[in-house]
Length: 570
Ligand SMILES: Nc1nc2c(c(=O)[nH]1)N[C@H]1C(S)=C(S)[C@@H](COP(=O)(O)O)O[C@H]1N2
Ligand SMILES: [Mo]
Image (cartoon, rainbow, N blue to C red):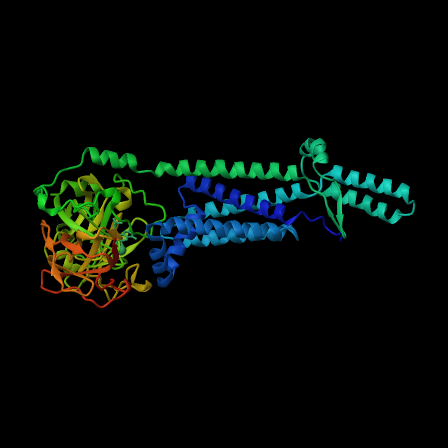
């Protein structure tokens, strides 16, 4: 074969990235039309589900609640690099790049199919996206081939050279052959080629030779192709986003808000004494928009209360299915409960307190009739996350709720709209299912929830914990306030002690609490001498147990150790 003309690497890489962008844009559009997941999200979801524990812990530690954005950003960067690589590979043969794009589509399809919400239409976004990417890549590579005028100019140049040194017949014959094959290979519309006839000539030398390779391509032809590709990617991507917006439940949420029922047994307002109102101290009630969020969902599930149902089945006398209207017609109650995440590091941010409105889980479960040998509620969210909760805890009379509102507001979508579980005393991963739609009554020796095979304990009672909120960095020497929160849900906090440097432990003053299920503010005044100081604290729960000084990481069942802060009085 003739030595192929090869476009420069950057042009090939650009073509690859453009093809990748078109693939993703079109996939997003198809996902919008058919209600599937964009392949990036699907790949991200399976990354979330398959990330080893150490990596997940590192990501949470390093990126905190930004870990999802970092993950998506990382996937996009990797995809862009691979797409650029496929472009470069296509210089050898476009088929290689095309095959690579289809392979990508296959990975996307696998990711979608292994996801929780996979319907049969779910493979369409990666499939059609890959096809669109492959078409884009081949069409851009056609644009990278030298346009006909380049060939004719090359022939002219050769003819001119010939008249100078009148012996090079072999070359011109080769050029003529080249012309033929080029003309045959030229699939692009001649109008596009004609358009560039004038402009490109001036822009670059039409014929450049290096060794046996002929580098003749039109930068402008490539860039218009890239521009069109980017346009298609952008428009389809945005259209896809808008179409998925049909799944937006903010309207439904507002409707529920307008008719939000009140509690049959409302709680009295919180006593003023629950909050010291010290600047920088966590307020007793965490505002919803400041409430920590931890879940595996890259895209927040959109669950319409009109079609929401909760099914209770498994080891029950009578399986039941209830609708949202059924649920909120029941007697609603309020409960002040502090949620805590098992991944919270000592002194970490994943604790928040709210007043919840909901239906007592125990009442609903009793209607289904729990069988005596069952010991676990395996709840599932609309996006397929699962959670195993001990039945005896839910049934022991504590305020375990199917909650519909939080701090007087309909549940925010990111906190589980329309219905989530709240169980005082258990870490969120074994109790607080958001977007809950299904409960299987079962046994720990028969079933396993999402986090159990991923390195976390099947049981997750909350360990007594505390946090120093202030001071965190620098203070002026002299009298300052040390303050924070402490929690031991359902046992209550009885005492918090504070130690500065290696001095005596001193008892802090405690704020009021409405009950044993919330955190408790604590504070103590301290005279600081100039210099560096280490502050520690420790809490004692309502049973007289003090939190342990022994340090442990969050996995498998909650971090331990005294919180400690190094600060300076200057
Ligand atoms: N559907 C679903 N519910 C979930 C989770 C999840 O990943 N998916 N994470 C749980 C965990 S680990 C915690 S700590 C709490 C956090 O609730 P929040 O995001 O409302 O603070 O939700 C729980 N409920
Ligand atoms: Mo959690």
